[in-house]
Amino acid sequence: MIDIGGKIIADLHIHSRFSRACSKNINFDNLVKWAQIKGINLLGTGDFTHPLWFKEINDELDDGGKGIYFHKKTGFPFLITGEISLIYTQGSGRRIHLVLLVPSILIAEKINAYLDKKGRRDYDGRPIFKIPCGEFVKEMMNISPEIEIIPAHIWTPWFGLFGSNSGFDSLAECFRDQIKNIHAIETGMSSDPRMNWRVKELITNNISIVSFSDAHSFWPFRLGREATIFERVESYSDLINQIRENKFLGTIEVDPAYGKYHWDGHRACNFFANPEETKKLNGICPKCKKNLTVGVEYRVEELAKNPKDFVPKNAKPYFLILPLHEIISLCYNLNLESKKTWIIYDELIKKFGNEFNILINVSENELINQNIDDKLAKLILKNRFGKISVNPGYDGVYGTAILPQEKTEKQGKLS
Image (cartoon, rainbow, N blue to C red; front, side):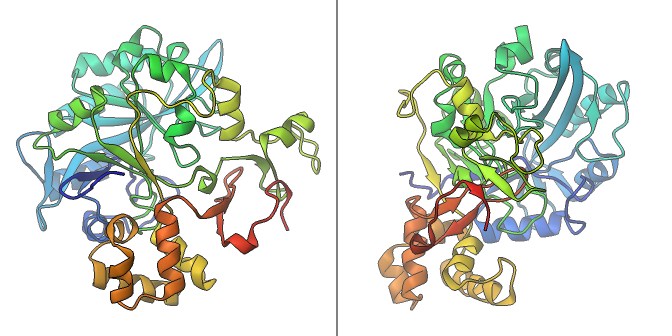
């Protein structure tokens, strides 16, 4: 386990209200408030390419002088970050999302000027460009070699580099001679480091395996649900060096089954299947007779060269935990966002300071001494050690946490 005291818990892949399907209430005040409640120490701004959000970045953040920007009202730290969607033809159709970490607003302005020559930035916080990945990385390095480019949610079917519909099977195929400038991948909710360790290319190239939330709102069951733990940093360079040298401390992950694309299935048909069942079905939905959306676990098995129990020498430890709202909801059979769930959540935060402290640090005795309901206390501790089962997500549907006595065969038609 990792002692997170005095460390930096960072969520560097988030979005603004200017991205599609994102909360319209996302602003810097709300991001800071809920990051602190969650226990996050450093946030990415997200969406620096969007003109209106970029103006707010300039208006509401102060330059600390070392690539870290501070919220003027609270002093909370941010890095300039964003996500780009690249859709293009390379023999066949290719589609991929990339997270960008940027050393300064000045460099962000230069990136935006480059993108303006390629298309529009004003219609979405995650704009789409018809630029091959290798070319894009080369152009970014020409702007600044300090720009960090990380393939986002690397296994998700539609825009993850290893996803079943991205068109790629390897980093080398995607980035070609620019693979030398790719130092990390993002696990995404539907995979964890252990699944990624099975991909030989990631190990032989010493690729860092980082995690961020891709949050579309500021609520604590979204923000920071996945994060990366760093040694304390004084500058952007300090953090980037930890990524590039694979020297960060570890990650916080949700159970991969909780992710929306862990197994194969059809949301419209209310059907999902594990990889073995999918193979028996020849990838065809038994209801509509169309191709199933092939999920992450299936793709890992397709691309894996290392066995399931493989652990690299420099493997980082990680926490496998569900958000606290999920644990409260599971314990009392409540809706995730119900008033009663929030009341219990708020009481826990008042007693223990922030969510990560509760999920990772607070001892059983401390829970007992604060008169926490025994059933909830036991679930919090089970969660800490990845011992809560999850019925897998599929085709855009989140997985669902289940109490042990409720566990059922997790394939075929949903009841």
